[in-house]
Image 1 (cartoon, one colour):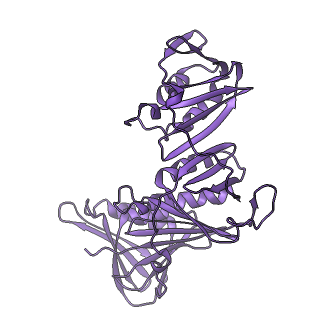
Image 2: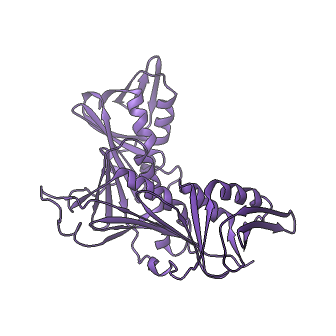
Image 3: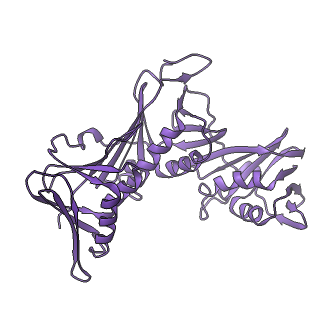
Length: 380
């Protein structure tokens, strides 16, 4: 194999693989990216056996073929080079990577060791609006637990309906649910909307946390819609010609509709920036382990307070419109801040029932999406 490729084209693609390839793994080939040169392009593939990414870029191919190279080290070399053409050529005992006056030989691993990955195209595909998907991922990603033994909570539930789509994540202490309207569009063998299996029913899949992170990275650039396919055990997201392949988490996601309280009769609206700053400041003197802040709610005001035997105490008063009964409720400050940084509206609402029941935070007058954030109070 021998090819010449522009530095920036190669760097852009290699950068996308850095989150997928794990530095420490027991299978050496998984640290490598598979490169296949053919025609006027070079194709890339990397995987950690849970998530994989296929991509491509233009190249002048002198000799076709395929090989594998360490993804991290190749990225570091390419990043350090000046803006110029890079030559990658297979030689005896290694792979030459050269540019300008720089010359290097890299170790390779056999192409045959690279795992075979499932191909897309076997199931119907649905078109998803990119902007909406970006919103949904950013508003739920943080609520996924990292290391729960209930493995189905280590991902977010993606629900696709003919007219809308939802993404739900929970770690048992809070739940984030975002729903966006969509036009029913499905393609399979040239058939229109209404292909059985995509548009006629609710299609559910649990996406691993890492998949969502990589999807967010791919969605950051460009504005084309994305194509989604749910295979038997894998999910496929085609984002601007790059294909993200993800294993599905097998398991029963909790019945999230039951977690969202219906009878929260106390309603308070806050200016988002003011509430964010108050919680940030007050939390500085909260208990470092529990991160608890207390909302003391009275007529037309809310005192956000914290106290810690080691550090002291803090209080900030926020004027609000409220005429209900006085009450107090405690939250983890980080959980509140996660929500406040995920929304962009000027005003947010807090719906309460009492000090021991779930509270609901929502953005007020959000356009294009419906966002519900359920948060469990703390007993301090």
